[in-house]
Image (cartoon, rainbow, N blue to C red; front, side, top):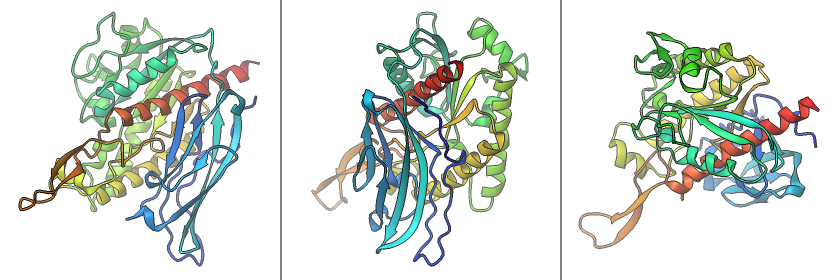
Length: 374
């Protein structure tokens, strides 16, 4: 079954529609990955930058999945393996105000069977939490998967990896692309310089990982403001390109998954709980959108078939899968309500969704690698 995509590499960034009531900014990764038995979603709030998604109608045209009010959802079966066209049209008061296209690729559940692969996850606090890496490891233990080894010096929560640890990574709270490139205690800085080959010698028996995923950028967004958005965006893209080039220098065959800057909780309450008046949800979404637009543009220019976008931004429920707690509606009232209290770090269910996204990406790349050999 051919799993290749004929969709544009860059995906849908921003569509200008003449005569529209309002042109809405939207960002859609080029490919949606799915694997039998694992639910995959596109949460509409994560791909549009609007004040209230409830003011819009989202119309998905795809032979697979279900179009709900807030998401498209799909749990594939083995019979669904293949590539399908996925199209979204957005309406406001019956007027089309945006559209996006992608390819839906459903990979076989036994992709990679009989192989032995290594995998390195690079990221910030969402990786350090170790929940989504553990989910990837759990899924990779299913029948039909390759022998799977994770590479990394950290077991999470500032604990150095031990030889017996199965779930390891390079995830550190507050880190950015620049941190990995320049900070003296970066695992990739050895003897005072960026040296991924020396890292591989130390942590993977001298071999580059077969797969690397990188999920960074949220901390960059928090250092941005309206006056430096262009400068900081360009800087992050340059740092990203430098890090990926270092990975590529060590092994031209490593499959690299570039995850986008991840979305946030659906409520401003979460930002108030964490950051008081320092940054609003609307500001973060603006900076996140700018960074992801630039990352997708850089990705398209790379034209490297072994670098692909992991659509992590799609499959995370910002409304239900972020932490919340009960509190009084105000000091004078006995009434209580549930309020989100973490802007960027999901609850366990949200981390599971991240893991599902990375797993489905891995399975697709494994299937495509097999196709090229046949």
